[in-house]
Image (cartoon, rainbow, N blue to C red; front, side, top):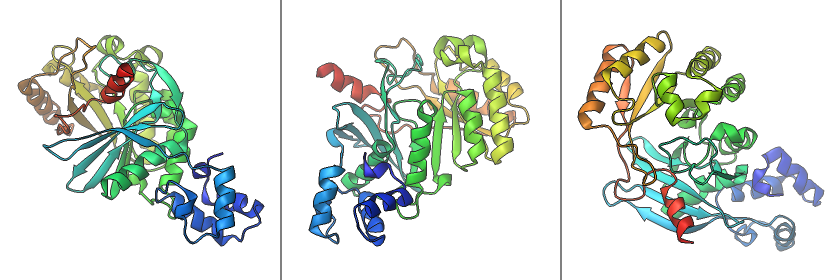
Length: 341
């Protein structure tokens, strides 16, 4: 058992079983959520307790195997090696409103999206809550920059690891821990409809970001296999239910792929299908993946697409490209390291 997977009340029970007073649990919890790598760093604990904790509940901190920092915008990309030797990526991005960390939720991914490097090797395993939390904690420790926002948009499909992701959100939102507001957290999904409905019931007040990437089933089927299981209309209907349950506007992620989904007609079709649904479109210039034949849209096509959406009453922004001089596309750094080793 990893103590960092536990809530404070659960940790209090564990500490109590060791014959320790209740206040020790808060001390241990606080230290763990500061990103310590050993119990010896917990200087306000008695040595015998530190020794017992170390023997029974070792801290499995990740190690940096690659660190790339953009000279253009300060974006930092980490490749972390986990205790079992697997690797995941984390990206730190700097914005005017604070520092955002993009974390992975799985080692690999089984969704098979045609434009994504994360899924090329398939799914290896799902991350535990502490392994997601560690990405936030140790990125903050290594960079020296306070983290204020989190996006679950790295390697893996968050809703495919539902229970562990929900526990991670509870931990990172904890007042005794990092205390990051749910309204500062975005969770991305490629469209697992039943899990969206389950998430809606929790009313967490985070931002749901849906990877749509196509205006219809004909296009979406060719680039996102999940669409054959949950067609786009089922997905859009689930988004409407999510909004009705939470009053949170949906953010649609839309990778701009040249000659595939970037025409004015495609934008007009989206306008028709989104009628009455409060939403925002985040247009993403496609990152090139060596193994994929897909190419990014031209600037002119992106601008025309954005204008068509906005003229139709749908707010749309073009995501600022960060880390262009490093392996910015999700999964690229891990894939290069894995192939080289």
